[in-house]
Length: 148
Image 1: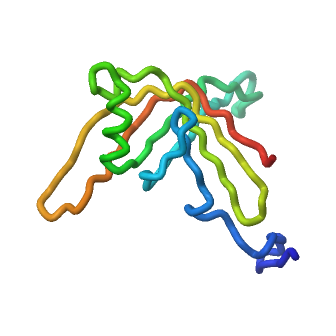
Image 2: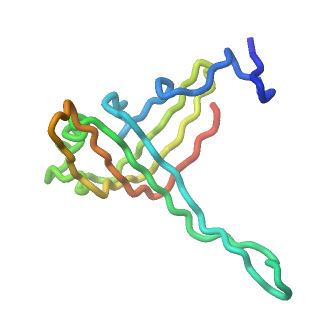
């Protein structure tokens, strides 16, 4: 049964998507040692001028995608083991799939395509009980999903 919250938008069971509803796959393999994922794209949009003071139109330029994973060191080591040199930057391009599987059952899938990892670093300090490694990547593009 759908409920309605203060803004008038009906929600199934009143539940929104949470971290527990997200599944991330790297190269088709589900990753459990992940604590964060960030991705997006930006596009240059500029005003075009002609006669007068105001724009007569707009033009769109390049789309620049970005991606960053935050993984436990053990997951990073498993990835590095797939590299011929042990460097993450030497891995072949890989797709990252992010699936949102909320209680509502409305599956949404985003595909971050052809990622090359651009960094491979560790940051330890006294008292650490584990290592979360930030892995920035350079994707070719993002296929923004639609509800299935």
